[in-house]
Each structure stands twice: as C-alpha cells, then as structure tokens.
Length: 194
Image (tube, rainbow, N blue to C red):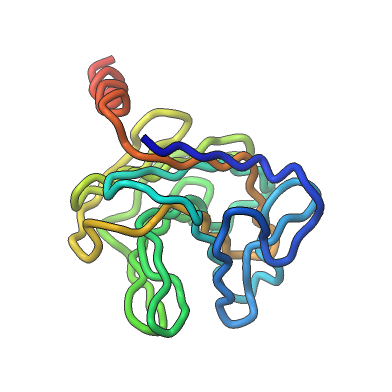
C-alpha cells in the first residue's frame, strides 16, 4: 500500500521540487513559498503530480490555507501528462465558499469540463479537502466526511494523485496521497452510518 505526504517545509521552489512532476500550463505552475504551495501567477491552473506509484484506486488530500475562496483548486487524482505535456485527470476545486466542483481534463491541450453537479459545503481556511477515485466514482471529502460524489468513466485506471491550484491568492499545505485500502472503505461506511 502506497501512502506519501509532503508538508512543503523546505526552501522556496518555483516550480515545486521533490517527488513531483510540475506541469507548466500557459506559464502557471505550482510552487513552494513560505512552506506552503500556491500558483506562481494565477493566470492559468497550476498542476503537480506525485512521482510515486499508486494503485488505480487512490486519493489525494490537502489543507486549504487561503483567505478568500475563488476557484482556488485542491486535490487531484488519476493525473497524467497528455501528449502535449498538459494535465489530464480529475481535479477538485473550491469554487466559492459554499460550492466545490470536480473537473475532468482530457486531450492534448488538457481541456477541462465539470463532472456532475456542484457539491455544496461551507469551506474555510484550515479545511482538509480530499478527493477519492474508486472505479468510475469520485468522492469529495471535507474534514474526513464525504460531502458528495460524481461518476465519470474517462479515467478509471492509472495516473497518480496531486495538486491543482488556480488563482493568485490560493494557498494550500500538508498534502497526502495514497492507495485506497479496506480501512478507507470501513471509515467511509462508518461515517455514512454515523
């Protein structure tokens, strides 16, 4: 079972360093500044994919540390590089303080489209946001509680968890990603029935 973490507590790096593949999207990328991650210029989405090996069912989680939610980004799953070196996979974004969305990015240019409907919540600084991919189901969690799911069959295997950051004021910290195990399913069932 693969589980990896990154607290970004190291020297500033633009683009992000360590066990990450940084994807330059129109001049935007994920960088480390003051022991957190952000988008270097906020013009386009910045993406980073973990360089580790994961099973087809995996998750990504990161803590939101920004102050003003406006399509800020969040965790990504099943990430991979397109033939045009752009991000392909799924990404969750804190769209407003009360709405999250899941997008699928496909094709050579990494074109994005929303999957399913908006997911309602009340999002704030300090929230742990996780995205789980199991089969064709994508489930968004907030502070270890599932808050919504969508289904999509574009990518049901492969890829790796990562980070997606939009907006010039978005910051995140303390990332973790890994394989979904039986323990995750038991936690999910327990919390649904609590």
